[in-house]
Amino acid sequence: MKRNFRIATLLMGMATVSFAFCACQEKAAEAENAEGQEQVEEVAPAKKKAGRPIGNTVDSLSYAYGVGLADNIVQNIESMPFDFNKKVFIDAFVKSFNGQLNKLKLTPDEALMVFQSCAEKLMLQKAQENKKEAADFLKENATRSGVTTTASGLQYEVIEEGTGETPKATDRVKVDYHGTLLDGTVFDSSIERGNPAQFGVNQVIKGWQEGLQLMKEGAKYKFYIPSDLAYGDQGAGDKIAPGSMLIFEVTLIEIIRPEAPAKKK
Image 1 (tube, rainbow, N blue to C red):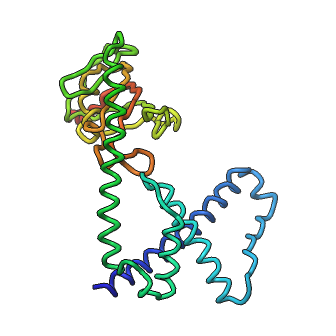
Image 2: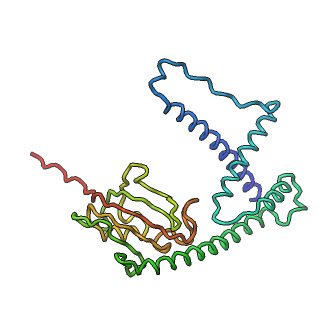
């Protein structure tokens, strides 16, 4: 079992680094193409610059893999929703990498269990801190004129009222939205992308489901969504930390109805 786990980890690492390198090459190619499509016929495409060899092929491969793997590890660490001690990590990594298992305080199997246990503990701690901060904000926000608090804890305010129909849970809608965290950080925005979103009302987080069914077509509301109606203690990705409250400005553009089949003549 341990051998299979190690092999799988190695393969995942190699695939991740390969993906990272390929992604960089694709981004560079996209940037080159975006600079001027009209020049393609007039100017011969420039040759791709090869990386400078470090030594022989084996050394170059080893060095490049080290750079790519380290870059990927750093990105993973930075995306973790809790603090990380790099010095302790490097010490354990070097000893494990060099096969000095007798100098390690944990076996690989024990390390996996400890990592999972500690990560869950720290995520829960972070979630509680964020929920406390959100609760203080929502308590104060509820006293503002124009803010309504529903039985579930969702808060909303009407920026502009609509005149169309109100969607049901089973409907599909087209919306424009701008989502921020409590500190103002933008984590998602169809407005910034310039592309309204379409989805089923019952396919999104609970806060959205409830909020959309309060709106009429053409309306613009602001939602203040506590974590229990959003992504809970788990958070979402590297932008929404555990226990995060979300704030959305949402415009309900239209309810998308399926077209009725044409009548036979």
